[in-house]
Amino acid sequence: MHDLSGEFEKQVCQIASLGVWQIVTGRPMKKRLEPVDDHRWNEKGGVFVTLRKAGEVRGSMGMLESATSLPETLFDAGATAATHDARKEPIDENEISYLEIEVTLLSKISKMDSIDDLVVGETGIIVSRGDNRAVLLPSVAEENGWNQEQFLEACCEKAQLSHKAWKDPNTLVEYFHSQTIQGGSLSRKIEGYI
Image 1 (cartoon, rainbow, N blue to C red):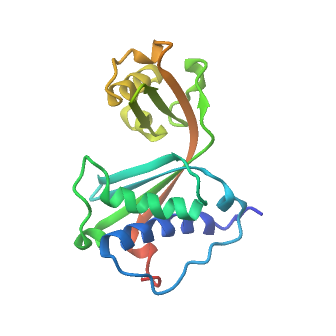
Image 2: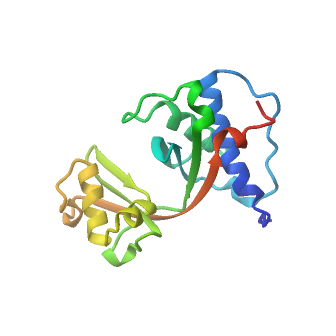
């Protein structure tokens, strides 16, 4: 069964928001969130959680694949985005009321056979070689006005590789589709649960 009311998307953001709240405050929830009936809870795709404060990214982390259920993955990704983004200081409890949350659900990851596999604004990419690896979500290319080649070059640079490394047969380039859910105010998502 597929939830058509938008409750699934709302709960995706609520669960990730509760992960942020719990890791930052260390306090337990007052009541459990009961997920709506939807087959997507059983999928094991990747998840990214982005937290913004006044429009600026405050933390963004995720996982490309999950070994646990989607609710567990969302909760963990929220907690990780709040505390483990190496580019940012961990989120403080005083900031929670100012945060906005966005959750990106990833499809199955496929190997890129041709640059034409990439659709700007629709596909994200993963570039890896050896220990170097980077991910760019679909929105990054769109926000920067990049074409496919510029998107690939930016991902290579993020992975600390030469910007043309995507052309090297020793570099693995993969792509995925995603659904981005704009959750809005994080504190509104967790009202009644904390």
